[in-house]
Length: 221
Length: 228
Image 1 (cartoon, each protein chain N blue to C red):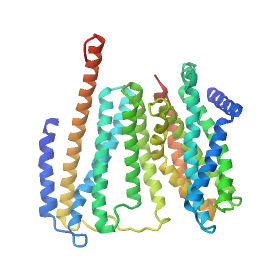
Image 2: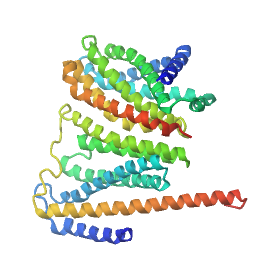
Image 3: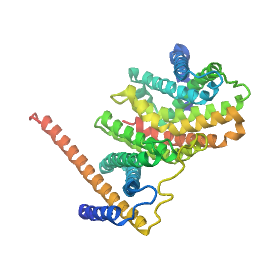
């Protein structure tokens, strides 16, 4: 627990000093939003229907890069090897990395969501409490698998394509749950979105536990 | 037991072909194309067999480090993908005349395509990773994560129904199988295809073992300074 918090603080410190990860991810997210909005080219009254899928597609695509970056940093100067030789349980490394990813992606969501509302004419303020729940559940589930497989992907030969290749098929159920839940929350409020939120919660529990247990096999040499 | 696999596969396969094409009556509404159903459904059972073997063998590899378990996982993933692909193609051949489209995002099809992608990425990881124990462990982790994803995919794709307009609500097999020979045909062709899958997985695992042996021999030869 102590070690996990130390890793979380270290990652956030690095991020805070350079602000490279967050800023590139922000800019990329804005550009993806623009691309989606322009590519769909919907009349203003139909645009809100596009908000949930665009929001989550943007999240997944930018999240891939955000998480990958955290592990590429560890690769430089063999930092990961240093972390692993430290008397720290690999599960704690996983927990710390996961927490750092959730914080960085959460910051990205805080910018992306209002922009989605702005670009696609959705009033998000009334649905805010529900949205926070679905955004957090989606973020944790995505980060759980992304943290596990980023550690794999950065060590393979084709590392830039490997993470999306491994991660995208696995997160499809999360994407479906998140889009359905977001759509329902925007239309009918939090109470109506039970099915989608249940899928997200199940995904989170299963893969946080699985990642926590399996991370040691991924990083062991 | 294993030596009987080829003979048993050929025997049941011939029986399955004979029942599906000669014995079973032609389905009244769908016509002759319905006969693909016996092999289409069986192919997916073989695919699932492969995917669950991947998970079991992956767990065993992580637990014991058994190389045989790792080879079995690799073989089962490839054969699972093979039958999943064949099943999808057969399904399209059936869907075009019956549904009017080659493919539709109905829950079962969506699920199949996601599974196909997951195990394709498993094969890609093994192909791009290289030949060491780290890659074997990564693949085993992915094999386990993949099977954990299956129930969540099943539940999540059901959410899609009812929200999107359902173009097709008719389910294959739901209305059919009225004739007892249809059920016998499905049973026999399932046994035939599962035996075929088991045989292929065995052959593929054997070939993986030979590949490993050759690579060990080559390294030894290189180490001795001889030409490989």
